[in-house]
Image (tube, rainbow, N blue to C red; front, side, top):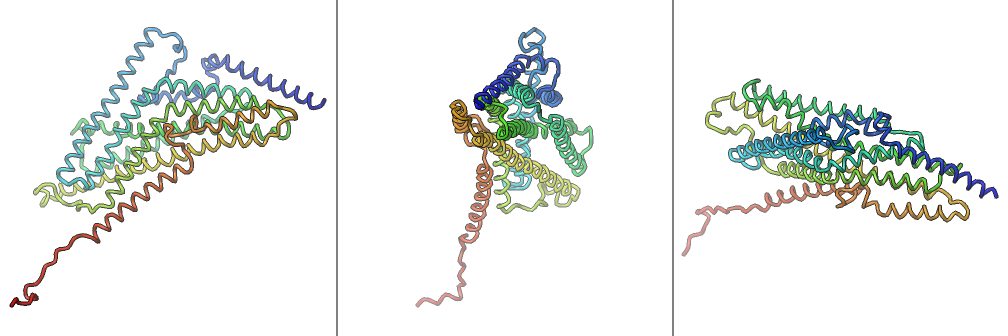
Amino acid sequence: MDVNIAQTSLDEETVEAQNALVDATDFHEKISERGVHCVSNCLRPLLFLFRILAVFPTSLDRNVRRKRNHSAIIKCILYVNYIIIAVLINMFLIKMNLRIFWLFKERFGLMHTGTVASVITGTKPVISATVIVFSALKFRSHQKLLKTVDMVDVCFRSAFNVSPPLRIYKFIIFFILLIVIISSLSLKVTEHILTDQKLGDSLLMDASFILVPILTLWNTIPLLYYNLFNILVRFYCRTLIRSMNKEHKIRHFSLKFYYEQFIRITNVQEAIGDVFNPLLLFSLAWSLFVLCLTIYFLSESTSNLRVPITEEQVTNEILRNRLNNSVFVFICWSTFQIVMAILHIAVICSTGFMTNECTRQIVNAVLRIVPDANADLDRFQISCFVHKMTTQFMWGMTVWRAFPLERTTFFTLISVIVTYSLLLFRFKDDLVVNHPTILILNSTSVPPSG
């Protein structure tokens, strides 16, 4: 009798919670329009910055979502042209980097410091153009992601009375972006001073004070944005786990209720994958390319940096110093890009496997809940949890479903880089040891014939 009463009270509480979630779902759009706390409204300054940079575009005006008037269509066309202009600017920078690469290759050789540095620094506009194109193609997926996260946030606030500290997250992101801008701009000012450049001599050089920080932002924003959504997912997972751990003392919600929240979290992860999967694969590809090219360059015997290009620089010390300073600046920019590549690999792998592991802890919390007596529904819900987790490779944090982001992924990438470097250095040593030698015989040591 007591078991039936407890089960009845539990069902009533669960029904009340589910009704609250239904009400929150029905009024979700009204809440968003009024500016009440939700993820997309709190991220409006960040999304506005993205719109200015032509990355991850989204409609900030929620009133024009359902009906498209002429002004909305005109704004859409103008913004598409704005994105095309941003891509064309990056294409122009790619062309300029190719010319610089060819100039260094013709006069210094392929494995000279300036040539390799021009290749490494030339990846920045390539990355920027790719980020702009991919984010524009994923416009609808991005809209769906924001809507899904808003729905989960409203549901968790209604059921658990918690919400992620988005103000802190925004402050950290803007602070990191400010550091990135200051670092790139400081390096550009150093280049301007060391190479004896003057304002007004070249329009491209003057515009580079604006283009260089923007290029750095284009390279950094996708990584920070992806990490932000992973942090939100882990927050909701930990909230669900804490609530489940309290079920040992007294049952508040049914397993069916928890399974519904778990499905909402997995929907967010699947939406994150739809938006970021191509960018993740591309980021890991260019990061590995930059690191492997750097290792290959270090294994080669490079020429002296003071070798002049023309005969005039043999006697002209000013031109020689300007050349050496320009090569030094190239090395600094290459080091900056190498650090960015290492950070991309580390952040993508670390935040991905932490999200996957935190999601699996939900199932561990479910398995610790003892089902009620003769509660076949609880056993069925536990089976649903376990079955859903077996399909994590389909909706979890992966690299375009090619491989999941786990702890082994990070160590596999590190082992690939280390193995490549060891084999490369061993191959160079074998070439030096087994280099063919020419024997020169002394004619006096040869005995006379006859």
